Each structure stands twice: as structure tokens, then as C-alpha cells.
View 1: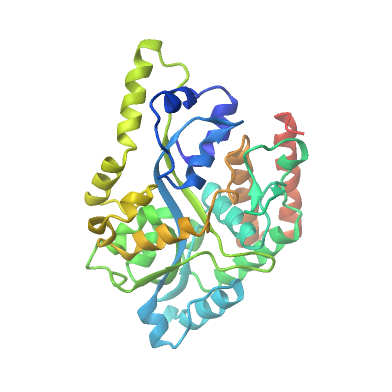
View 2: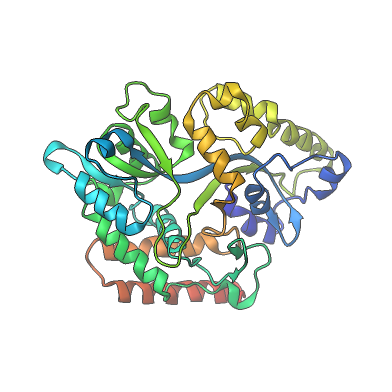
Length: 353
């Protein structure tokens, strides 16, 4: 299961709780990125075990930035300036690639950008670590399309749109990574799951020339890296005699030994600290150590795309309505108002508030 699905699937009773198996077998999850473990919980119960943790990072060509005497951008203002300086369409070179395709890809971009400006896409309670996404109720489910962070996110997208590849409005996860790997784009927001396109391909201009940062922050934000990825779960309707075998498979497929095996065969993502620290693994790519340090410093966060019921509907609505802004057919104010009305209707129909 994709990490954001757990709230939806668990709330509908589609997944089997794993707590009894974990206690019985003393299955230790302390080696796993805790933000990923928490994202597979719902209403205080564990429904999954992380298989892959894939943060979305800002990838940039350190050789190009150094040649232009530019510092890596750590704020949204700096990123716009760097993208503008590097953008050179006459040479087939563009400032930045990102998810701008209509629907779910753009919706994910919007949720992550809102987090840059310090606000989740729904009205989560603030905590010392960020925002509480594990015990959400009532008004905390209310979408926040009318917030200052939502407006600023749209303004930021219009800014970087000017310095993006010409096919940006058709660009999703794979296309943006491919644009960066080919040398077309100097920077990209990219999940580590797709980093092998340039970390393991010596023919890529970005091979050996890439560095990584957490998402550059906007006002009221702090450095964060939104986490995606996958976890294994057991369907609740599995016949009883098959459940024990499914748990055995789940436990083994998510083990440290298997996680290392995946990496040695072409993956660059792991949810386990012990695997990241393995010298044979860490030598494969600098991205392994980057993600490990971010996990230890609590920079990896799930609240920008919280695993709660209804989140996929809200993301889809965001991607549909905000596309109208990027395509020049609707003002920011109007698009956000329409998105708020649609999202409110969906959450009310679900009985969330």
C-alpha cells in the first residue's frame, strides 16, 4: 500500500491489524524510520510495516550551480532566483522540473508546497514536531484551500512555471526525473525512488554531479522533506488459514536483509537505519546517507500528505482546480474558492465534520 492510503483503507476495515503479531513475535520496529511506522498506523493500531521510504528531495546539478557561482537554494525566493539564472531555453536547458500535470501529480505538489509555507492541506493540530496526523477529528479534517499558505503556494508555482520545461503541464513523477536525468533541467523535485535514473546511470549528465536538499522553505515554514513510499499490509478478508503465512512473508520481505538485497539489485531506498549504515550500501550513492541523516534529524515528515480518510479526494481536487491557474483559465482566488467548496462537500458527505 502507498503510505497515504492507510487511513482510508483502515477506516473502511479493509486491512488486518498487525499489533498481535508484532507483540507475539517481538517484531522490532525501532530500526525503521519512525515517521514511516506512524504513517501505517490508524486509530492507535498498526496496519502495515514499511517496505520502502522514498522522500521527495530537491535535486540540483552542483556542477552547473558552481559554474554559475550560485549557492544551493534553501528558501523559495532563492530557488526562483536560481531557476531564473539557470534557465536558458535557447540551449535546451531549463531551471526546474516538477509535478505540474493535471490531477493527482499537481495535487501532490500543492500539498507539499503548502507545507513549505507552514500549513498542512487540512486543519491538523500543531505539535512540537509539526502537526498531529494520527488522531484527527471534526474540524481538523477541514481543507485549508482558503489559507495564506495555499495562496502563496499558487504564486510560487506561477513563478517557477516561467523557468520550467515547455512540457511542464504534462509532467508527472517519472517525466520530471527523466528531464533532470537527461540534463534538460538543472533542478528537480524528485522522489528518491527514481534517483537510480541518474545515480546509477553513468551516461546521465547528472551522474556524480547531483546534490540534494530538503524542500526550500517559504515564510513560516521550516526545512522538511515530505515522505512517500510503500508498506506491506494484510487484507482483512483473507481466509484465516492464510493469515499466518501472509504475516511470515510480510515479516521477511520487510527485514533488514531483504532491504539490503533490494538496494544491491538497483533500488536506492530503505526505511531501515541499519541498512543505510551498512558500508556496502552507503558506498553505492550519496543519497543513502542524505536520507539517513534527514531521518535522524526528524526532517522527514508525513504530515504534508497525512494518511487520513479522504486525503486522496482532496489531493485530486487540488490538482484539478489549481491546474486551471497554471493553464491561465482561472485566477488564484477563484480556483482556491472552487477547490474549497468541492473539498468541503466531499468531507461533509463522509461525515468528517
